[in-house]
Image (tube, rainbow, N blue to C red; front, side, top):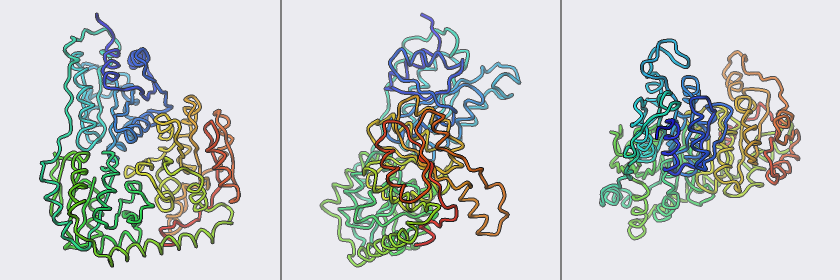
Length: 554
């Protein structure tokens, strides 16, 4: 029987296990929503398409299954593009399903430009696969393939544009079009991983570099086992400080943009580094190359097989990390060699020195008003569970401070806009994190500038009864850029923000709002917010001139 193509989309999504989709509905996508709803899937309204994409991205990071965002053609799709590109840099599996115009649409059509394949072309550089579907029978196959592409190898986003006429009008799709055999990741050859380890096992001063690929493979336990077998220092890329437990005795810090002194020493003195979950051609690999000596032996293990990496590494092992890392851990358990004790103890001593100096810095600023952000980070660590999820933003509040001054004790607990670094990420990301696990603590860290870009998603939190805590570090500035202006002699223009009462704004949206202006009130306010059964916005007035830990201590 003929039925709207939107029903076919919903069928394929739910047959692939989708239980939740993030949308800003239009008339082109209501039939998809009907089909999802009738099949028991939740249709969650975001207040902007970027935020829908952020929620899908975050769900992908936390579950390993593609998050789903739905948009209308034209501005709906392009509004989501930033969120999709962000998912690409974060190696997060997600699928954006969007309406597109028919191929024979006239120029200057509603939601269109002259090129009817504009959306497909726009998304191509920011996705693993971008396609448009203009024949009804191709809809199931395109969507099924999207799930394979999004999750295989290095995970990432996929764009599937579907002709609006297919979505809105009755179509006849043969039953055999829905048949699909999903592919699975290919492991590396049996000996590739273990053969590559000879370089590491024979080195005296060896280190581990653990990146986001380990998180996306949910292989953190294997990375810990490898580190302990090697008994060597561990460094993470700056934007993924949660790739390895920060309270583990072997962790020495992060490098990239602001380098921890112990991590710098670890890499500079190493004669061999085993890199796990980092693409050899990536920015994170370039950072590793810059921080190591010219004669260091680098061995990469990552989840990709199709790229030709630009690297001078001694070995590159591509393939499914969920298969290769346990094999590596098993091999090293019996034949790991020995790490030079003086090297290991030297970098651990440097890490301890830095921690003590951070404690001294905290003592110096603990009582000042406006509140110093380091006070917030210290109180947050004291008040939260080990597995609290922090969401972070571009800029100081959600980026520099949680990177510099928070101890991530459980992997995959810092969901940040990362190297794409868009503003307005934390609140929609926190909503998605709470929808994934309602019982887990979630704290969104954001500045006042970022909050003005996503405050509408507090409404989504209220609508979905999710009780994350949003901490707004309110300094009435685009603080990171303002400090750059004044430090380097630029004109201090376009960086002031009128003082906004975000607590009152939160109350107007139906959430709880609390304004905090004295340091003694910070930790009690955080504890009360975490105990609440509703979304709480803490509007904390901070010092715009506060210097980062990485500038003051490092």
